[in-house]
Image (cartoon, rainbow, N blue to C red; front, side):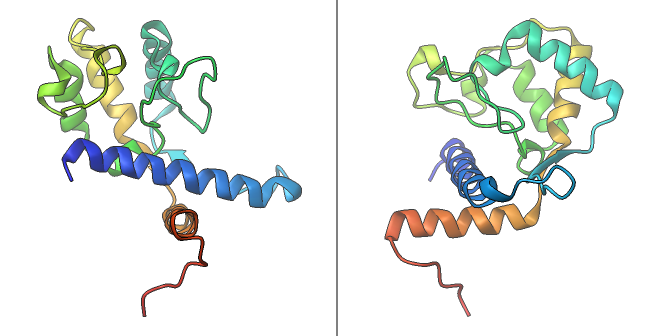
Length: 163
């Protein structure tokens, strides 16, 4: 399995786990004790600057973040939730700075769905985006639930942990 394919699989696992978790929690949602599977360790300043940049360049047209996706778009881009658990800040900065991001992370998607170059952004904007993305995390319990849900979906059987 190639590096890019691994990230897509993890993003799919995260999506399946999130859907299973949301289905389970649907009837008992209580804002005071809702355990959200993703979080950020970024400062407010970094978050605000990244949000502006992401809005300006339209990241949310393809990617989901905080479990929210633009449903009017049918782009198979990975969720950004938890990105900082898979890529560090320097890798993300290099990726965002590449004239051709597919040279760093190859894609088998149609050209219109591939990650565009962000090299035209200022260095400050690219560094801030990398910092923000590196701080997007997923709780450990979410991975386990995603793994179990994926197993059950693929096999039709209850998940049996390895002993």
